[in-house]
Image (cartoon, rainbow, N blue to C red; front, side, top):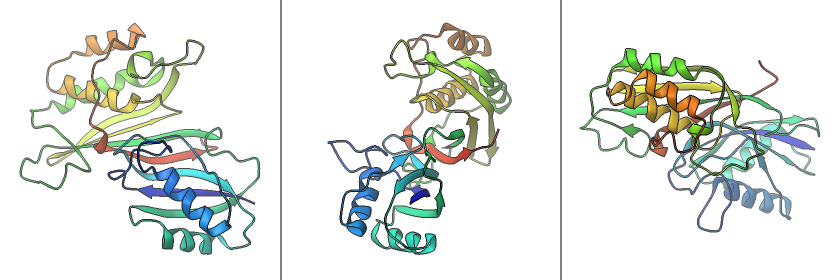
Length: 246
């Protein structure tokens, strides 16, 4: 039986989603609980990985199980054993052919930035920048990314020459609520660091340190050396993974 699971987590204590050899990961924490429940190792497959200190409100993974329990009971059992920084939101039984990564059709991320210099508690959950920001110019910069583009310039990780770097951005916008700025971006998929690099580039436009023309030039360069910006990880949230929607 295959289960599709939606999970939210505070990424602060973890090295990221993916299991590695240098610290605790969200993936490893969930698999340890599933192993306890089943009596054997159970592997989970996520919709994609999030980096260290990045959070999620709607990450999705799947796993196969021989346990004969309801979805409601599965939620209770997992949450009872997981650390409180990881909370299962929903569980549903799906077809055995469902794949959390390959069947995903869109993802939505939110980046949260604060300019509140008096709040000492935000640094684990928001980016921080105290410079004056031109919201109208940042909104115009966001529009440059919408559509289908080669995003080689907006990933700082090595990519095999044969791997496609083309992605489609359906929506990218920034809104100000008092001292907090929210960047919302929705696309078919994302390269590693892509959202954080896009957000920081837009911020540089807002600070007057980059122009709309220079951002367009970065995008058209299709070079991993074209963009030198990357927002802090703790402000990034994976909000939703979509399946079967356009």
